[in-house]
Length: 186
Image 1: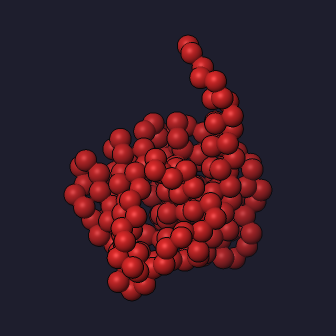
Image 2: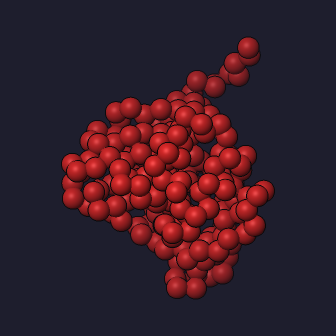
């Protein structure tokens, strides 16, 4: 086995960014009723890493939240966040470690595609400066199609009609996405 120089530093930085995105995700996922009722537990509890995924289970006052996040290949500050509440509500968002540098409006759209999934359009909704929320009905419908894929491609058309493209490597994910698959894949 060969370890590249600086690999520990890169993995440590990726872990810290993943933990930060998970913590931000917990705070930002206000469309979960349980998250709106109270603050999550310590976001540093039970953080796991599998491949490019960082994943966590958070105990909320009246619920549980499983989350997994993976960085974009083009921009390490952009992450795909998947979250599943204890009652099986699936949510997905693009998260930025600080804020997205482009604006969205009612004409903005989001396209998701993979090798097995032709381009699927959704409304792109900015929940916060660092969060673009995907339609939960669409995400629940396409999740079984994309979790086995090697990659998923997400494009966001901004207000100025510039398209921002992100590629997310999804494999391996058998451990990181196991709770989401069991409770939130329909």
